[in-house]
Image (cartoon, rainbow, N blue to C red; front, top):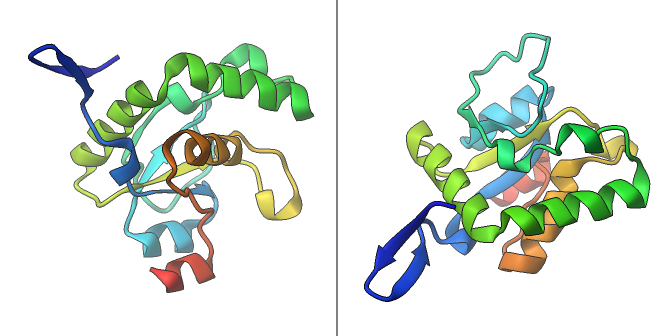
Length: 150
């Protein structure tokens, strides 16, 4: 876990609540480009199709471990949430913060494959709910209305 030591206090490298985050599918190019956020891979497998934009990095701490990929429904959600708890907010915030900083963007859009508008279960939305519970910061799914709200 990346931490900065200051005297007797251990402090996370990045403030989790101040990170600007959203989620989307790799295929949502117009929304991703319009967001001005760094497109960040959060999947074990890379897209095998042309994206039309450059990835700003990857945060593998958010990718479900391979053994989880065949799980479904509540079993997947519970296992993935345990995974996130094991990694921890500070480590995830540090990894996201470093990736955002190296991209030069103001925040990150966390990407994977599923179409949540069609009801597909997706780890990016499980992460978003977990992040809001643990950090108190909303992680919206990109949409035209989200972009309009700025």
